[in-house]
Figure: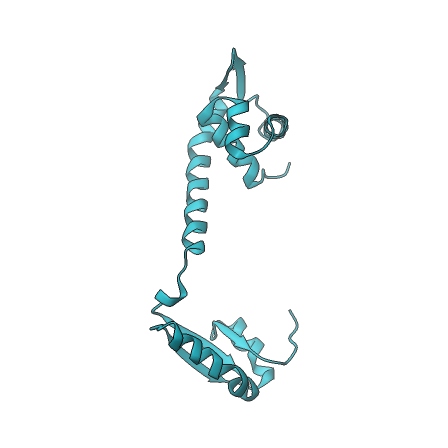
Length: 156
């Protein structure tokens, strides 16, 4: 059986925390039938009811309680990583960027790149490596370049 997707796992974690299908749907901005459908897929995947209805409360099973900690932690790590990536500020980057350019690329693209770095008052260091078009792909694959700009077509 397939691994649940992130939306299914997030639904599980929120349902565990809120103990209500309706509140979970509202929190996730989906419909209550969507949460019910997702719960049905998760029940099938894990071979367990995961939650039992007791009045208006969804009570987690032992298996749901076992799953909650690791899934909550994993989702928190993913959200943290995505948030860090989303908040990247290029003007605050102080590392070195290795850029591969052909001679035409150097003439065409390097001046506007340097102007943009100066305009942003970037402290990033740019290491430019002039390459023949047939060397670019190999340099990227070997990790010798962070970025390459060329007019040659490469097999991807």
